[in-house]
Structure formats: C-alpha cells, structure tokens
Length: 336
View (cartoon, rainbow, N blue to C red):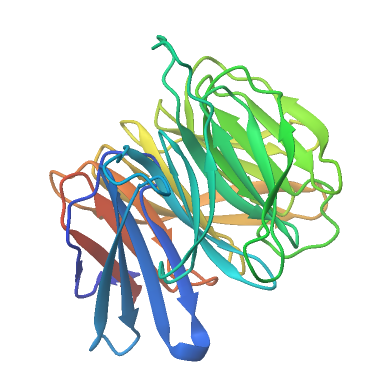
C-alpha cells in the first residue's frame, strides 16, 4: 500500500519527544516544510515536491535580548489559521511564534519560572491552532494558554487561561474534518491520561472531561466529533467527544505511542511508537449508530528505531513522514 521514498536529511538527530515532527504543505509554491526538535534547536527543512531542492534552517530557543540562554525545546508545530500560518516553538523558558518559514519571530511569551528551584519542572508542550484566530499551548502546570492571533502583524495577546487539568499537558488537537456541525472543536490531554473537550469562542467552554487511568495520553486527535487518543500502554482509544462514550479500544503497539495523526479527508489514522512500528488504520463512521469503527490497513517497521514523530504529508493520507530518536533523517512513505 505504501512504499519508501528518498529520505530527507536533517542537520541534527531527533530528540525522544512526543509528536516530534510537524509538516506544512504549501501547495501554491509546491513545497512542504518539515520541522524536528533536537535538544535546544529546531531543524526546519523546506522540500520541493520534485525532490530536487532542499533548504535548511535552524532556530534556537533563545529569549529575546539574552545572548546565552538556551533552554530545551519540548515541541515545534506548524499552526494553520485561515489568515496565516505560524511555527510555534515551546520550551522550558517560554513560547515562541515565528512566520512559518522561521524567518521572523513575531511573538515571545515567557513562562513563570519559580525563583527557588522546585521539584516541578516548568515547560510548555502541546500546540494547536483552533477556530479562526486562536492558538492554544499547554504548560506543565496543567494550564492551557489561549492566544488571540491577528490576521497579520505581531499584536498577539494571551486572551484566556484554561485551568482544568491537574497534570502537565502532553498534547492538544482541534477538530480537523472541517465540519462546522461539530460542537466540540478542541481536545487537551495530560500526563495522567485525562482529556478535556472544549468549544472555542470569546470564552472557551468546557463540554466534557474524559477521566484518565493514570496512564499518559501522549498524543491526541479530534475528527468528526471523535477523540482519538494514543497511550503509554500502546493502546489507541476512540471516544465520542461530547459524551465520552468509548467506541473502540485497540492494542495497537507493544510499547509507548509517541505520535498519532489523521488524514481528515480519507479517515486514515497513523500511529507510531517506541516499538519501531508505524501503522496505518482506517476510520469509518456508521451513521445509524453514529459510532466510529477502526480497521488496520498497513504496517511499516523502521528497524531498531524508537519512532518519535509521524505525520501525513497531505489531507488524503497519500504520503507520510517519520522521525526516530537519534536519526538524522526524515523517512518518507508514499502510496504505491
């Protein structure tokens, strides 16, 4: 179903972080941007669709006006809003927002770091654009910061802080099917496996809380009103977002899941884990029961590699890309 394409080399290897790959497809310019985190550096590569041109850029997690301070980066993700695309980088010190090519930093938000060292680590992790003008970023306290993004310029403001989670945020996702009927359009997950389902707006509204089982939910997606959650147990669970009804539970991997992704137009689901496997699943809605079914379609094994990032390169799931811990390349697979 899929075959391996030529890999894209990156300047540094990928760190072992959840969801450590982000992909942005720029159709008018026939380019795809990839971004991967290594320690305190974000590696970005822009690749032309004909495979002939690659351009590399590295961003460091630096505070504005501080020459030496670099902090470990937890995640870098492209956020697509109707009016603009931004690259958001979250670290131990704060949150940086760049133009999508990484050329200009448009916003910096510092995290509150305690004066005295505490047992609690401070970091930001979990990044998602939601609705027309918001970007949400999670922090280690369990709070979710909601930023209001203007259509251009750097007048970005922190508009709300959502304080429902008790543990560090792991991942955040917004409704990706483009369906306007979906009441819920944001899901947030934490280290204890709890998930909160939200409706965005002037004030974000909590619609449902799905309790955790003290097992980390490392990656989460929202598709057609269904929450798709990947766990440290290697399981994938499918919940109805608004009611929290469990539709399916799959023992998908032998080890910790690091990344889930969904191709919204085709209903293909990608899962990747420490067990060196990337699996492709197909989701289908059953209109009579309004439930989701999941079927296994395809496997790829990246031998001896702890996979930490996997993303579809397009909305149909025609191609996907994979990163692995200590691997200085992005591996690509395309439908045969």
